[in-house]
Length: 108
Image (cartoon, rainbow, N blue to C red):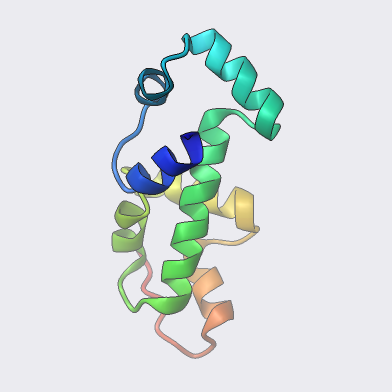
């Protein structure tokens, strides 16, 4: 249920309260359940999903990195860059350069 909710809503702002309302669980019960089920916090899961979407767009789309940031559901470019680098080991522009050598990197 949560995975479908994330897939359908990842490009918009999603709070922990939104997903808790969707599941009908209390916040602490949901957090404990989700961590046991996935080994991650909800926010870590959501960011991972969004980074996956960003990677797909960086490899398949020709839009600027800033637009990919927003389309993937992040609302802050510096935060997107930090989360991306932590997850992927490089910046979004460097990732695009690795996937498409010689292509304009679409720097932010």
